[in-house]
Image 1 (tube, rainbow over the protein chains, first blue to last red):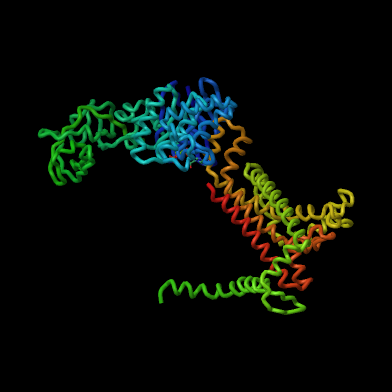
Image 2 (tube, rainbow over the protein chains, first blue to last red; image 1 turned 30 degrees about the vertical axis):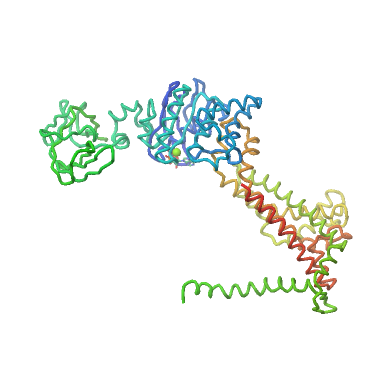
Length: 336
Length: 279
Ligand SMILES: Nc1ncnc2c1ncn2[C@@H]1O[C@H](COP(=O)(O)OP(=O)(O)OP(=O)(O)O)[C@@H](O)[C@H]1O
Ligand SMILES: [Mg+2]
């Protein structure tokens, strides 16, 4: 649906997007994930048509759109700061793209009604943006973006200005809306949890390049680089060596790995379990109660392991603990 | 002694000077406006609102007031419209932007009297280059053109300030609403009318207030270019008040008129302020 082929964009001496190639399939929820300044917004703006690539091509529905202005592309866009028109009511905002198409007022009214119902804002037609909460404003923005019946919805950190609670609520609704409408969504965020929760596939970006592309499971369970391993999820990278399918430190560990040579295994906190005959023995340095879980930092053999336990467990800082390791773990080769 | 008192003490000299050069004349003029004081008959007897009544029945004063209203409407309207146009043009990307920016801000850097003298030469019926080019029009000597000519010279100078303020306004606008409008299918012109202009409204209204006050007291240009003539074609109210005071020597009458003008300006400012704060 959206194809980027070797797309490159620079601002002066900064290469914001450095040879990105990816294909977003029809009906897919695709996320660009990465730290601040890695070029996510620029990539999205290239798809929207606010920027033109210096090299490479952007295609939508198989058609090259490099020369097409934003209004000529079948897209809708939602911005981080809502970008509503402050001088127009909720109705006016959502009706804006419809009125530009000179639809009869009767049709406009019906469509706006449907859109507002879709984002659960019936009854607020007459309000101005400043009279709405952040979450409501973003719903209006979403309705406006959908009004033109775009094929691709572009969203640039649409939830990051909202409170945690509203963020989660709207996240669910966004996913539901995208499923129901069958829309293709290209979503930008720096929040890895959000990316994992929403996406069909994720492209993790770093310094203008795609570092890894895959489903949330692939990204979380098999990060291909240290950067992705550190950026996505929580875990401990344990340095060592892969030899004959097993991980070695000063002694062989009962952990299967794929690969050969020096590198790291990634141990997720939920994979480590206390066990009387566990392979590792260590001392709890820090125990943090997080409501749904108890997060420990366990020091063992010169490593600080993050371990998640049931919050009911009675473990305190200073306790000694044996830990069982997972049978297999992702192995990431040391970078040259 | 507390810090607050130290602060007040330090501000005192400045306040005293300000009081002496602004407060005292204002108060003195107010007191005079209730007497029959003239330079020929320095008489401080209290006469109530007599001079105000006389002013409101003085056809020359009313003419000057009407003329000033016309002039303010003309200059402020033109200044804002042209200023907006220039600001939008300067907001685009084009080569030699710095030079154009400088050129637009230049008139602001010249004293009004200097502006008057420059244009007096350019528009001089015999020596002026422009008068020569358009075939001997007497811009300031002909009652039909004098007020418009005066207004144009004024606009030429004032437009700098408006253009720069509006440009600053344009630059401070968030770019997303505009981009949202483009994605929604708006043409640049539609986006300008329906998104940019409403977002600029506070800046435009503030400029409207400022420019109205500036133009309502236009005096220097009249003095340099026309002295109110020909006849009374450019006899704007502040110039008329000046003449009443220092040529007619009627200080109390002029003070009353000055206060009437101040009152009118304040009504306008309050009205604008209402507009500005309503949303
Ligand atoms: N208009 C611009 N002019 C110059 N440099 C820019 C411009 N836009 C972006 N950049 C630079 O390009 C790089 C990528 O920026 P981009 O906005 O795409 O990052 P991002 O991943 O969206 O970051 P964030 O999470 O902070 O929004 C940054 O180094 C940024 O400074
Ligand atoms: Mg960004």
